[in-house]
Amino acid sequence: MDIDRWRAVDSYITDLLVPSDPVLDAALEANAEAGLPAHDVAPNQGKLLDLLVRIQGARTILEIGTLGGYSTIWLSRALPPTGRLTTLETDHRYAEVARANVAHAGLAHVVELCEGLALDILPELAAEGQGPFDLIFIDADKANNPAYFEWALKLSRRGTLIIADNVVRGGAVVDAASDDPRTQGIRRFFEMVAAEPRVSATALQTVGDKGYDGFAIALVIDDLSPVRPVDREALWIPGPGPQGSNTVSPKPA
Ligand code: SAH
Ligand code: DHB
Ligand code: MG
Image 1 (tube, helix red, strand yellow):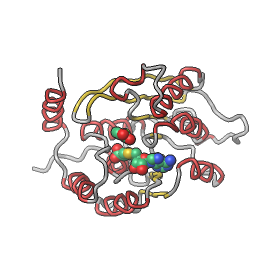
Image 2 (spheres, protein in one colour):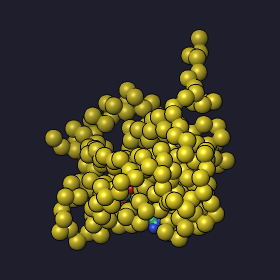
Image 3 (cartoon, rainbow, N blue to C red):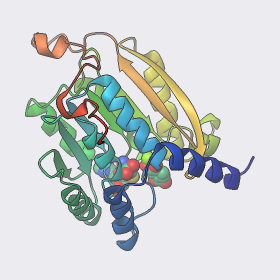
């Protein structure tokens, strides 16, 4: 099996199940125009994020690593009308492109883009009392995944879904002796997840338009910080019940 076949199957799936969308297409075009790296999730992966947001019944999302906001738009669109997404990006130029894409998508009121190093911003979010978030998407510099997982836990509640992108890296994840800090970051991340009794997790390998990679998914199954004041709302695990604009509209005649 080769990348051409993976691409063909991605196209087959996307053509059938992920209808092309002018706003998302425009975001990818704007990213390419601005010379951003094509590190956005693939369309069918964006749709997976959308489904996970809806299954989770998420109302608040934290994204670490915005790039041009392609995944941001997928995640935000799946939120109910009162939902909010906070996304972190260190590159000013990428952040400007993302702001424009998010505004063009009509989501400026939903998305808060925080510019700076994620490891500077995450403690600020915690200090401001932001969170717990319902869903956290980790997709920035992979070397820092261990620290991002720790912050994700701090900003979680029982029921929070933590998703990490690019955890397979063409299979490099099994190279224990790798001197690539990104690979070591992913490996340490997996070890932490495995050793963390407060989460239940798995990971899937993916092939497709973006090559050979994978996602990890961890559900927070136990209460977190004992110093966090008990907040009944924060302990509630949302289900996928009806949620305003998330309900299916009748087909037009
Ligand atoms: N989630 C995006 C892709 C993100 S690519 C999508 O799927 O559409 C990873 C992004 O993380 C890049 O834009 C990069 O600039 C950003 N990044 C890298 N290191 C970072 C850091 N320390 N803090 C915040 N963002 C960082
Ligand atoms: C890279 C980062 C990503 O988030 C991604 O999806 C693909 C590649 C990278 O930094 O190489
Ligand atoms: Mg990624």
